[in-house]
Image (cartoon, rainbow, N blue to C red; front, side, top):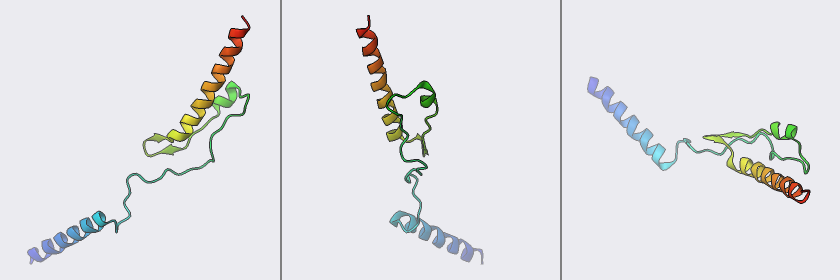
Length: 90
C-alpha cells in the first residue's frame, strides 16, 4: 500500500518538474523590477540637499542600474562644470 503513495508522489514531482521546465509554472527568478517613480532626476542647478534626497527603486540584487547611472552621469557633468569654473577663476 505504501508503494502507491510513493508512486503518486513521484508522478506529481515529475509532472511539476516538467511544467516548470516547459514554462507552464510562473516561476521567474529574474522578473522585472517594480518601478515606483518615473526617473530620479536632478534639476539643472542642483544643490547638495537635492543630491541627498535622490532615491532609487530597488531591484532583485540592489538598485536599478539605469537610474543610478543616469544620476551619476549628471553628478559627473556638474562636478566637471564646477571644476572648469574654478580653473578659469585662478
